Length: 130
Image (cartoon, rainbow, N blue to C red; front, side):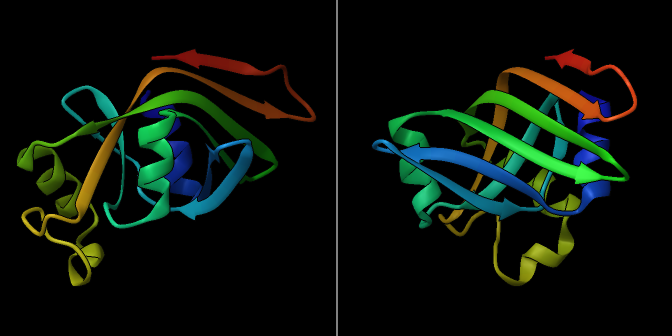
């Protein structure tokens, strides 16, 4: 899991895919943080991605860096504890200009039943489950 988190952070931007009905939706994200043994991402509760994940929590993440790409298939589960939100915002202090752990908008989600694959054109794929 640490290797996946490190890859996402080194990439800087990764892309989260969800579905809305039968339409795929993809958007850039930039947070990846381990808290209490789980890998978390962060978003705003008012965004459409939240409604999509409430309807179908299955998601995929894709990132690229240094000739390698990462794909993570998982279920994203909300952790509504203030401690989880605070930990994320403490790890990304630049987000505090827009979010606060007590604002009612900040949402953190952890990856459940995740399968990550790191691929390249020159090496066999590495598969990581967590």
